[in-house]
Length: 308
Ligand SMILES: [Zn+2]
Image 1 (cartoon, rainbow, N blue to C red):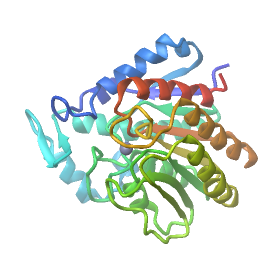
Image 2: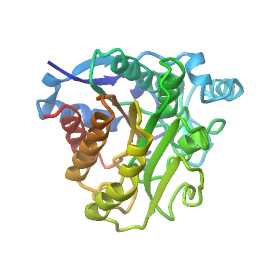
Image 3: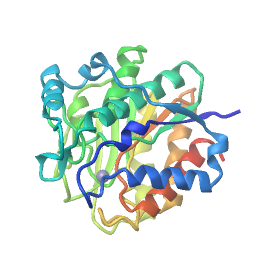
């Protein structure tokens, strides 16, 4: 029986921030190729992501922001919102599918149709604040999914695990001081977006790490800080902001994680879910820009999700 869903949509390839931009559709192509080369496609349930609805998005982003985004889409070419974040004619189609993937994953898991899910989507989301696109992100996919679990399914406690090399400032913006949502994260510091190290909200367990940190230190931090916080929160569902730019081979950051570290942390997250009496895990792609290490890490992560 397949227990892990793979959710994506061809529209996620339409978003284009210009030639040589690292956040490009080749990332999804590399993941697809590696998935097939690994023979993993035989073991997964594939779903097309729906578009997130305005109601689902408004739980995180105000309507004025959504309107502003929609009206910023260029008819041709590329329009920059900041030096590294730009829109093309297909950007909103991709962004709506990316947010919708997390919503569908949440529905599938909570209805018991699957045990867990990986959403292979772009643009990523964890830098998108309530009213601000930045850092390659427009809609905060993980925040929209987590709010869907709380608001549409009535969950009282969820957790977000973020192992992207960058701080998920947008997710923190969405949930700071919301006791229903625990966020645990590591991120290279000091580093873009230069936030997170000074947050004192009790539901934000942020662990800044210096450039050069390797897997053994990462595992110790997870064991010492994330795990006690997760166990104390007793989440009814766990979301993973799965960025793979902390990989040793990824030049976007300077952290030294490898595939076995991603397998290990995925198993830790699954173990917490099982301690809490369920298997509800939804993982959504964030960063990861070295195509080879991104694809290998995603395959390793999905294998761990699927117990393969
Ligand atoms: Zn990142």
